[in-house]
Length: 226
Length: 214
Image 1 (cartoon, each protein chain N blue to C red):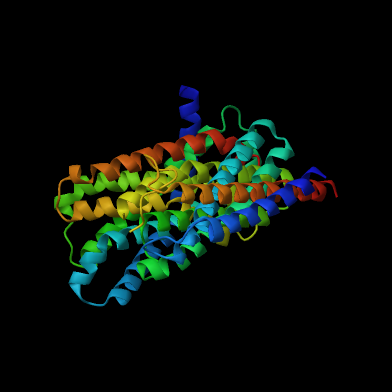
Image 2: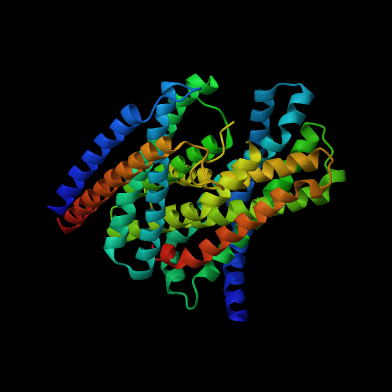
């Protein structure tokens, strides 16, 4: 078991390390978030009430669009220098690689989400601090759901032609329940209502996360064969 | 020969279904003749569910055994499944216009059916992107399994999100509030659609087998 966790950790650590040195994805993702903010502002106009009414949807739109870019790249780096073969040849249960990649994706998404929240707070004059703990819980559950399907589908499409097109076409309908539940729960939280009012949505998110995780762990070795 | 017999049986059942829907079943009191769309709408969606269940079965079967036959089952079920889901959405839309006053509404069951449609269109697109049979079968199987596991989650999420469509009369709890003649006409059409699906399935599997041998 500990060897299993260590293998997952090593995959995640390797990705974090290479990202820290190359800063390839994160810089672009943060910049992309900023651009999204401009697009939202242009789409909604200067009226504050409209921004606030649309805020839960806008936030998750921002997260899923950044996620589409981040998850799609997860396994692309492994195609260079025959790294993919290295993963295939690595000993032990292959699902550890999935969990490692998933952990890396969740980490990247959390960073992007924090940046996006700060940008929203600054540019739209919003204050998230009173609802931050509840919001964090919703973000964590929602992000995990997006990332668990995103990581799996990212691995599937990495070796395919037209993957930039295929990946969102596969991922978006699959994560509809995660988006619906996350947006609804975020709406409750941002309205200042207690987290318990969104309990049904949080349970649904938790159940969805669990189902996606189980499917991902069980099927990943078939995906990795390439 | 057996496949051809199945095809003719499906044709006969369809003719019987048309007779039952337009002849045997009397006009519905409130909605009038428009209600007869039900004899197309409900069998289509039930057949689509059967098809996606077979996609799931074929996907799991392939990953466990690596036999190409399971993959052919998943493929041959997915194509008519998408077709029948499309028929469900189109017929529901035509039914909705005179009864609800709109072609489309973001009601729970409409939305979840649309999501189902998109998931399996994606599944077929994915299959079209890979040429190597084993790689295609493995990738498709994973998407097929996740798609099927997702169906109840999509269902619950969308139900809680929105709730205009009448509750499910056939697969829902309790007995359907329908007179016997209506149930009979529906049952005949359901049987007819299942036979048509079975015919499509066997022919498509046969074509896929010939393609792989070629």
